[in-house]
Length: 382
Image 1 (spheres, rainbow, N blue to C red):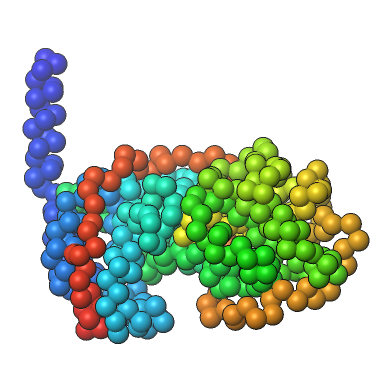
Image 2 (cartoon, helix red, strand yellow):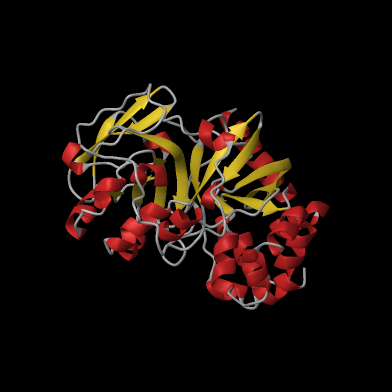
């Protein structure tokens, strides 16, 4: 009897596999994906490699997403050129590792096919933040850009397709992200200490970045800081070798790049680093994650404790006074913006999450850069 059941299961599995569409058929069957289908149709080598991947979830931008993307500075730039490496990075970032017909109930950070080193330096692939809500899901990418799943999922032989209403944004390096997030004092401090290039070149980092008000709160002290002082302070904000998303943060002590530890405190929905509150969590960057905080950490005052009743950051430096810090002088003006959403704020809760919504084994297969030759010209004709 047991052997009969096994044989029946094998027959059912084989029949199910035969009934599933290949990727091209799955995309072509949805008129909302006609632009994506046309684009990929001109890239047979890429589609062939993509079709060979197993255990993946493709986030497929719909026609409205394509129109919006091509009207953006990033999209128009690609359409006018032939940056096949960047186009591959964008498309690879839309391929999630694992088959997710649904996304469970918890916030997760799902690895993608965007692998190191050129556009990502995160072990296992750059992540997308997935926020389930009412049976649907929102996807947060670079600069907290949000995309939403629309319609029903479609199975294909290598996994599943979810239609989304906006392109994901490939996370940029820390310096560029901080500029676009209007964290200009932090950028100025990194440039002054000659640390920007070093920080951007690290892999697997967590960076707690003070906002402009935090630097202004110690503005009277900034001008007296030596390069050595500033380096000590800034590297105290960096955790090297660990990408700690909000779901990974708990009551613990973490060693920093500059030496010394920071203390993470979770109080309800609030997360503190020493006495600084995390105000904007989970800003994805090319080599890890940034959490924006409301005060500058002081390595000489590592025992500073949080005060959850305070609505704004309290300086961890004795004698600090609020005044212009002068650090942002010469830093480029943001041309985009950070896009913290209500979903992103809700995701700040530092509780462990599981990936119960889908399978997690690694993607089988890879995509070669040559498969995208000439893709910029194809975008221009959509």
